[in-house]
Length: 179
Image 1 (tube, rainbow, N blue to C red):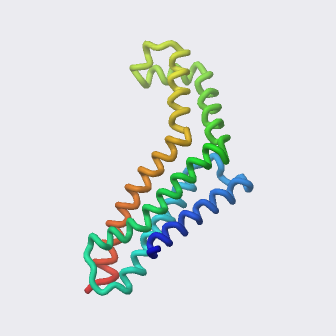
Image 2 (spheres, rainbow, N blue to C red; image 1 turned 30 degrees about the vertical axis):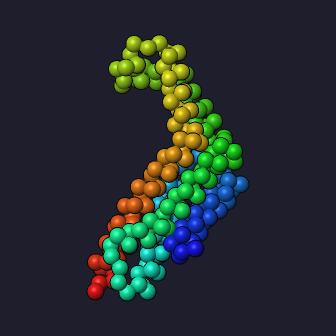
Image 3 (cartoon, rainbow, N blue to C red; image 1 turned 90 degrees about the vertical axis):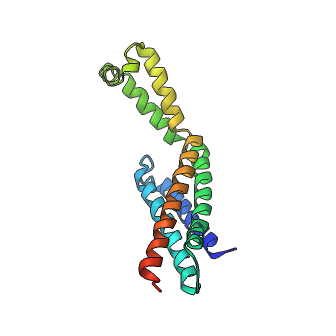
């Protein structure tokens, strides 16, 4: 197995370990932002480290090979983390989705919030309160489902990995490993 793939898988295992350690400690279970930042850091570190190790010993290479090597670390990370998050939110911690649904239901039971929704969105102005509640609950359920989370994670991390590979390759070519 090539070094970038190993580094990407190792970074994914680190993320999984962090996520699973936070579960019994009840640290930031209902917050997404800290784990998104950890995700961004780990995928960037995996791409940077693997590309640095390859560039250090490679005599001549072109820009596309550098980007490919960076993506070789980012894609295994993306796939493993995306699949893990599906199982995490589907089977390990389904309370997250339920808590978001409960919060939305609580918000929709407040008549002032319903008025604000009707005023903010012209499409909802002609609908009854029950129709708005049903529509908003269906949207919330879809947004926080494990499948949707996995798809968004795969999409987001793939794009983030591609952009990181491009930027880190440029930085290494122009600044660190100048010829």
